[in-house]
Length: 160
Ligand code: HEC
Ligand code: HEC
Image 1: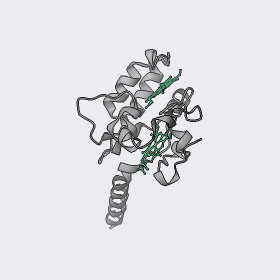
Image 2 (image 1 turned 180 degrees about the horizontal axis):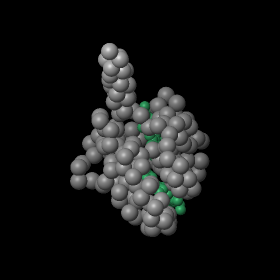
Image 3 (image 1 turned 45 degrees about the horizontal axis):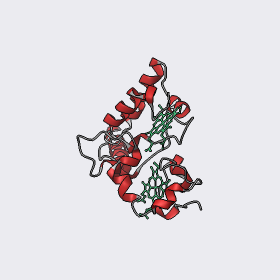
Image 4 (image 1 turned 90 degrees about the vertical axis):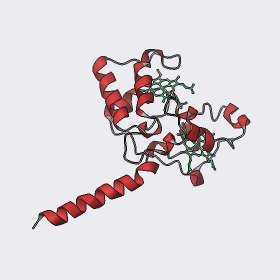
């Protein structure tokens, strides 16, 4: 007798989570990733790259965009496991960052995915040269809620 309402509650929760998954970039929930992947740039949400990309990024940490970002083996495994478990292609519906991404492509940058490029193609090239912006990967300079997953285009503010 007690089982039916419980099953119904679980079903509702699962349905809700799955419906919201495509647009959801929750704050990173792993302490090691938070510490080790935020020293040099914004802490990127794993939902923005597919599993194969995180695999390649983590395997290449010793030569990471010209920097040595390597970690001891236990931390490397923990970081990789978290990124893969929460990757763009880990959820049921898949993240928007998978759109138009060829199965054979393994982007090393979020800013090289077709979805990201499409969303930012109307920004004049001059904007990316501003010192106030710095790099394309400095999401938080324009999306101030980036760390909590707020990339809503209504709240974008491009620095002068
Ligand atoms: C020692 C400094 C350093 C650390 C630590 C570091 N990175 Fe990076 N990361 C960089 C640099 C430098 C770039 C390239 C910046 C640029 O050219 O725009 C970069 C770029 C990236 C990009 C591509 C951003 C884009 O343009 O889309 C990803 C993804 C990334 N890092 C993930 C990680 C992850 C995951 C970790 C933790 C395991 C990490 N980084 C730790 C220095 C670092
Ligand atoms: C120079 C400022 C700037 C930077 C840096 C920037 N963006 Fe954006 N982003 C924008 C603007 C402006 C838009 C809105 C484009 C439009 O109106 O269609 C946007 C749109 C988006 C959207 C779509 C939002 C929606 O509601 O459809 C996402 C997702 C996004 N950006 C993610 C990122 C990520 C992730 C990064 C960093 C890797 C980043 N952006 C870096 C300016 C920026």
